[in-house]
Length: 341
Picture (cartoon, rainbow, N blue to C red):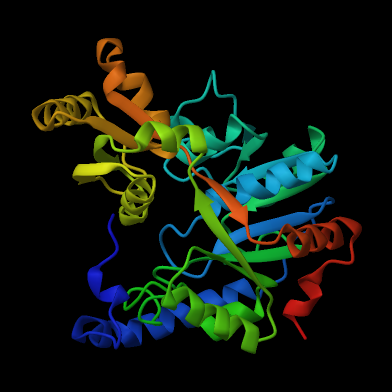
């Protein structure tokens, strides 16, 4: 599903105004749900969510935090709902055994780097993680889910799009009114540059919430392979334009773009169409790491040279405040209480 274009138009367009009463009701109900008390997990819970529907950069943020925590001697487990997968869980993801149809594409991607538990029942998932040795849980999404008590709540914002027209779903992309969501958040992570992200940063600072700046970067060795290369950018993510922009920044020449819906379940027909188009354009197919976990098994070996997956990693502008927040969450003196002054 692609977000409607009017979500990102300011001032709000006519369709948004017509839907605004429904959005106000939806946002009020979501905010009331966010404020419910959650169950204690027995180990610290760090939630990485976002204010809006759609992609904002949660997965690379989770992976960056996992790497920081593992580097300090912790054993983080990611807790995911497993969006797009048929398994309800709780279960620990095994990349050699589970596929994206079982547990979703993002959990499978992350499981190659950090232990991942998939569970629609978040407290049950946290309990499984703890039983398998987790020292803390990194909750991927779930900022609006009250089932687990959270020791640190981080909201990820795309600097290029921010919060769109500032209205709640279905009139706009917000899941609940921004002022109320900021009250239930401990810090905001703004990924990439842009006036929309700066505007959200201003709202966060005015509400007394720290702003952490970050950027998505392509590994140098991958960037070297992309420089000057003609590519067909194929992606099934929430913000495909971000992937295209990353390719251009790395020096690639975009021969074309193919946008699939977020969490798209690729088929052999999709693969054949991508290969045929790339051959006609005389280029390579560049895909995201998230798409690669689904496309890779379907891609013919004889066409392997025509497929290039482009991983990105998140880099904080300053890791010191992030590390301090994580230490506070781990020691039980976290900033969660700051969300309820």
